[in-house]
Image (cartoon, rainbow, N blue to C red; front, side, top):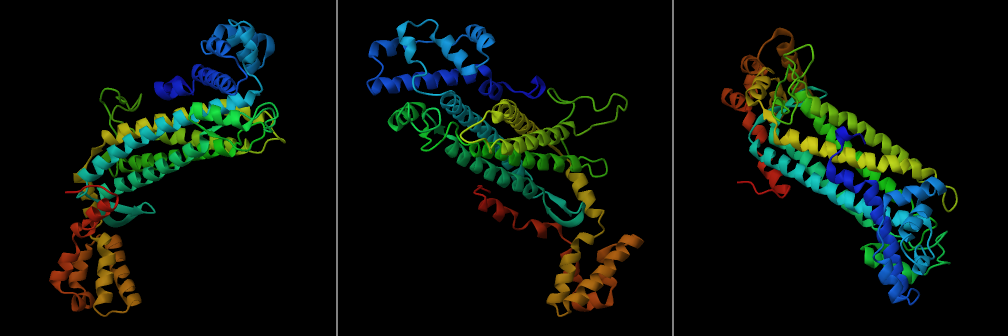
Length: 435
């Protein structure tokens, strides 16, 4: 991922340096396991435990061999004596690489989940603040019924909760250690050795494998990032729509330190939802990468290497991009500028149309056939749209409506607060404490 969209912690997790360190952990843990099984002498193990990785030494061997694990083993063995023969004893390249990748996946999941929780906290805070703020609910982009702006944010909180749950389930399935030899038959090692190494690394034995940990695991991780990115894009699209000039109900931060301060090179008045648009763009990359992860699942026989080059790109890039758009989303929600006056203005601009369902239901409850009630209210609504009239006035002056619903009841129907009366209960069902 390019530096522009890369934050330090997640970049460190997916760095070559961390990858090599994870490889070293696997190699040393394997030697420790061989020691416990009586194969590697204590004095040899003590020297092996002190080995270090040096990138320059590695590059020297890689330029010669063009094989990463062979070069790695040569480089970490360079300062050892006879005890170097134990490094990589009985195991194959992907025993090291796939087990190390499991460690990186766990680190990445833990970090991304922390970022999800941070965004959830920001959404919860803002949702509770706006619990009593009415806003137009829209379907098909058109006015539907009033709703709580806080509830709109609460929906995203609940969606992120599911993403967190899925990621933690994926973490459980990804915590695999594979130390089973060239094709997974334990011909050169033993299941007991794998169990010992697994325990030392905080992982679970892979139980049954071939030469790789099966790529449905990594596909699941990538798919979860794609799902998460899609939800973040949905949140960003909501902000983009609410910030449109003709709505102007909410705006992402602008003109402050750390945020965009110029919207256009030619139009000084522009204040574009650039951060939200950036989220949408990167979400496309993350979803696209998940398709490649699916294609990495079917490998030839016990293993081929067609997945390797793709994973070196998609796993770091998707992880880093997901971290970045989570960060942007939290910045947007934390600094969201809410225009309650325009929310109310847009509600009022509907001239009462958003109350048409309540009028219809009240007519039905008071004895009118439902189809007749629908047709009547639809006719009045079209009159509002085409002749710029007000639905409440039309209802008060309509013979059928006024004969079935009293003037007092009609006036009471046109009340925004009615649509917010259960929002507090919904929040409590989310597990939130609401005063």
